[in-house]
Image (tube, rainbow, N blue to C red):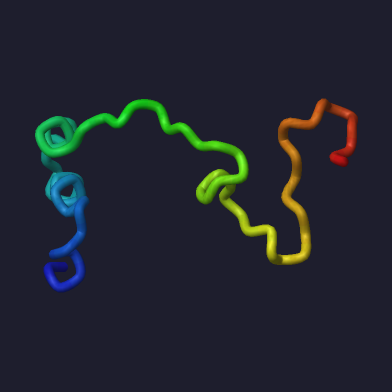
Length: 69
């Protein structure tokens, strides 16, 4: 929809998918690969959940069979 999509930076790929076009060509022509994402622990965006809900998220880096500290 033009009134919602006009300012979206991904309108080109979205239209290609909706119209059955070649998405690969649209992405290669209009976008660049920024390489692997580098996220530092403790920085904004390093977790997909909030910690302000009263429960700490699980520690996936803890060894099996050991509870988190």
